[in-house]
Image 1 (cartoon, rainbow, N blue to C red):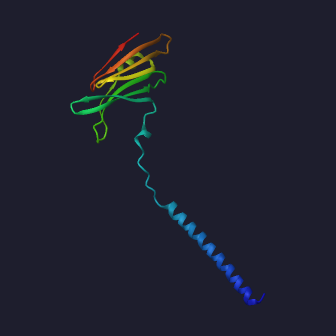
Image 2: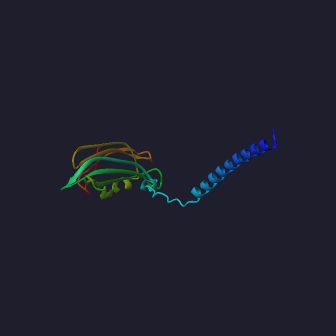
Image 3: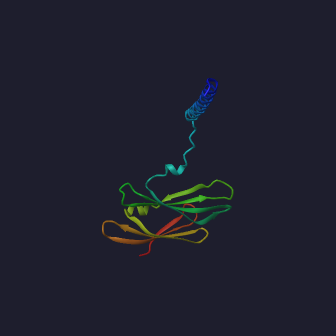
Length: 164
């Protein structure tokens, strides 16, 4: 091979090497710029802050006050002792095309004061403005279970009765 041919081959090899290095350098700089750009974190969804004691949430049935329609939300949470439950009923306004808002929230204190757990839950909504939740109040001290019935009506109004 002549000296001129060898130089042309060396130049082509060097140009290919230089081009590959330039591409690698560009990729490295691009990656550095992208990685070092400040990233604005998305706002965390409120569910990420949900209290860990909440173990069950159920939406069932409808209510209406005047022209404001809504739904019932039942929340069962575990008390700090880890064995007994708290029961809440919430009335959520859900007008068409607007943001849902809480109208009323009530802890069913009778359940908390009994120091029982909740099991065997059945919920039905036989009519508007009426929600019925039947459940066992389970006593961990060996006294058995009571069957209770919670009836919710208009916001803030509920009744709890023993059925057996």
